Amino acid sequence: MSKVLQLTAHFPPNVGGVETHLDDLVKVLIKRGWEVTVLTYQPLTTKVDWKMIEKKRHLLIFRIFWIKGFFYKLVKYPLLEFLYLLPGLFFLSPLFILVRNPQVIHAHGLVAGFAAVFWGKVFDKKVIISTHSIYSFPKNGLYRYFVSWIFKNASLCFGLSKQAVEEIKSLGIPSEKVDNFTYWIDLKKFHTIKQLRRNKRFTVLFVGRLVAEKGINELLESVKSWKREINLKIVGSGPLEGKIKEFTQKYKNVELVGVLDQDKLPIYYGKSDILIVPSVSEEGFGRVILESLACGLPVIGSNRGAVPEAMDDSVGRLIDVSPENIRTAVEYFYTHRDELRRMAKNCRKFAERRYSEKNAEKIIRAYQE
Image (cartoon, rainbow, N blue to C red; front, side, top):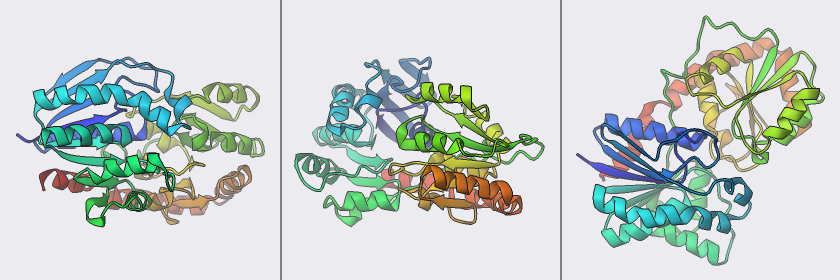
């Protein structure tokens, strides 16, 4: 049986798009006959119960106990964040390589990538690195040199979008060692629920981490000028949770739902009128867009990062994010329900065409080559 070691700083039950993708990847690999080991940290950004060791058929997950509370504080300081996340993965990787003896090490992100490349050289293992976001590397300096060393010493580098691929190539990585990959979703889990009754009031849905980078501040500022007949439901958790709770005391058309299980998300997608993805940073791909479209829900998305690659104008609208532009887009769809219904009819087929499990084939082929 072929074996793979997945190295990642974040994995379920931590909540996030990357974590959900990795859970999907593990399930597909096991279904295709792979034995999978996951080395990761305890949930670092989500308050949730967790197990250090989780063992199932053809799967071993080991979560490293780690100091919590620093991840969001260090996001703006890449080097410090790197040093915070490195030690556990770096020092435990050789043990799992020796004991589990994987043919392939698949690392997710720069920290895991460095650990994988270093120990991959020592133990002569194939190393694949996937990036799940846009890093905006500096144009020169030691950090850029260090990052390019990581990618150059991998067997193959995957970028989640065309923009991510170009970013990796800009480090001097040969084109033949860089490729893009695309998330997929469980189309049986995320689907349109015909018998579901929509909310009585026009409902805008936000799903994601409650951080400034996701455009939460611009979204809340925009809500102040919305028609009171328009509701906003916010699903997720994060540092801005307190600010949102305070905001809901004054603006009764805003509801903070909190964290939801994946199984409950399709209900919220199905009962809403449109999804808002107002990221102000270079969004990696926006997995919630895929889920939303699969459930027949159109999207208002940020015209930044890889979001424009995830959707087109047949299933939503791209905007330059600002409070005014958010309001304009929301109120446009509020008053143009026929166009919204037309887009909704396109969403499911769009998701089936672009975001099925077939997208996993490229990763599996890379393992086998």
